[in-house]
Image (cartoon, rainbow, N blue to C red; front, side):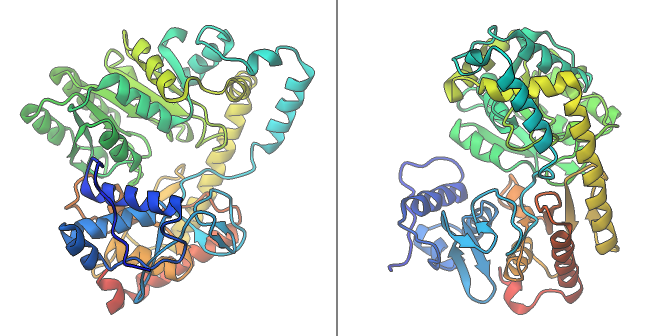
Length: 464
């Protein structure tokens, strides 16, 4: 087969994401079968007229999206849709019971909601009103769905009328719809310097300019935010102040107050991602309570109840609910009523709180295990979080560490996958602890990571 050459004509956004999108399209179409060896970073860079760093970042993003795998000393190879490893296809979300240990997917513990779902489905089948759940819905059709959403937000201290809260198909969909409601093509969107990777792709698709803001151990830096706002006219700021992805940072109350004040001073709309917030019982009050007039508050049930329940809630600032509903209608028409009904019943009868508490206990056990096995490592974590942020010793690159881990049968995500600035190269990786159902497999994966930290990189890993 001829050497792969991505087709970038007609694509928009950062060049490295154009390369990843071209790769994804060719994998999906079959033009790149599973097992195809891709050209080396430098060869691809030369063919496209881009820097080697751009090509390297594209490959790192493709690894993070499970499109390709890196094999130290051999190169990069297509995983491909439907490629079966021992534990399932590389691109699916099923929990493996053998094969590579998956510490890459940031999902909660599986199976906790199974009994509750069986009970709820039986109750639904025995009751009346099923026809309404299979029909097209508007916001006013099922009032108790809105009431449940208001109650869910109220647990975080976010008050809102039912008309201000919109159900979405998960938090990722909620973030996209909030961006659509709050911005116009060409607007400047600010984000944390390291942030939830799909936000970059959303910004590219919406033709938004993206600018990172410095972070530290507590999250977004207020002084850096003010400096950026003073020099640039920003339309919106995307921020995850609780259990930040990927660093696990949680902002304190004083910093949240400063960020809300800066946003008000410069007329910046806030998009607050609180998807992990329900897992942290002692989290400070959300930004939405400090700046309700300018904050889209995004939350979800996927990290604390069950990832297959694709239900999120977005609280819109005054006057913005209509634009938010329009964005939901444009992108999905409506959130599936049956899913929202299940979530609404669980919120009302206490099941949601019980499942959330069970996830907290599970997270605490896994974090304690990681703390024991990675003792002495440069590790940032929260006892209620589903992931941790692991700093790497001198000599390791994030991409090299991720590639070597993959070669040894452990999947994790290089820190570069979260960097908004292509020049930023954090020497760290994210490890997710809850996707694997079997704790023995998690232990094996963490022991592999520990061994790599102790052994250090070999010459092949250094060049990745």
